[in-house]
Length: 237
Image (cartoon, rainbow, N blue to C red):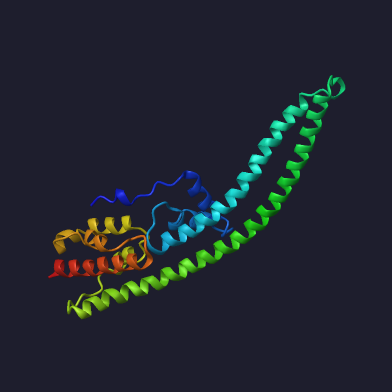
């Protein structure tokens, strides 16, 4: 199955900003968090939701940084104008006014940058605290989701009298810990679930569910987990 239609091509700076934000959470091991699921471009479920929140935060701080940078560029232009005016050889009142205006503008911009830097520092501190909260909430929900996926798969088996047993737990963890529809699709392909179930379970799920939504992605995971258990039981018998 082709999932290219579900791939979002985000700007490299947006991903870089999010990874930088994540790296700031952990001083001891920043790479692990920044290179994990939240740092990727196309996650699903709760990971997609957490990524969206982090992108909103990084965009807000980037807006302040942009304003500071624009002001710095303006100062550079004004200083070039000012330096081109020889204070000792001014020949007209117009040149004197240009010098005064440029000097006053530079001073005004310096004050503006100072104010924006204060906002940037306070905003950075607030966003770092929020990022820690988002990451902690995300990890907690991921653990809760695993229990929910297992329960859904078991309930499905019981209600349909399928008697599906837990298979290789190491392999099942791939489904339980998946953070994108691509991982689920690759798992289905590698374990030939389509051959065992006579259909593509991921394709069936995607026809009714949106993998970017938290609840829907959990249902997809539970469905593929049940299909895996069914496929393995068929292979054994």
